[in-house]
Length: 135
View 1 (cartoon, rainbow, N blue to C red):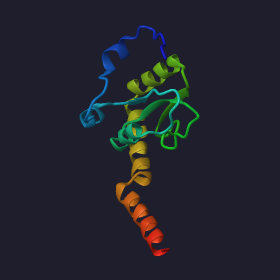
View 2: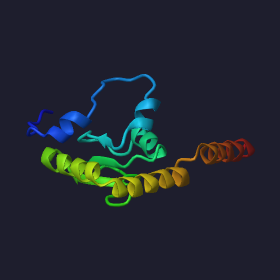
View 3: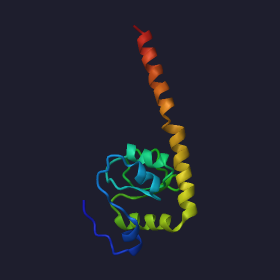
View 4: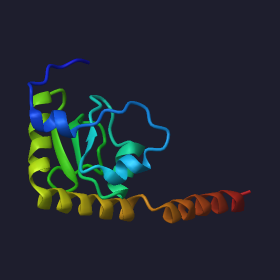
């Protein structure tokens, strides 16, 4: 997948593309925006991690399940493959600190309510106990 992005000083100076990073915690902590640029995938662990760090997400609307990325609430969704729309969404968030903060806070809250580790462990524990009691 290749796209030609027009020259934009704001993005050239602000976007870091580090490639694979073994422990991305420092990147999440220091980022202002998280980009989910896959053109076929729905919600993923990396997106949930960014949300836990209260980062708003800009993503392609792949029509796959994106339960955590809610347009205008936890991030911005743009048409899949529309690089210019992606750039515009990034520019909107880059210029509006209040909107970034609001979407990031909403993302973090969504993450707490839906991806809490203790709740997940309790759910699996209940499933295992239920299955064990059936034998």
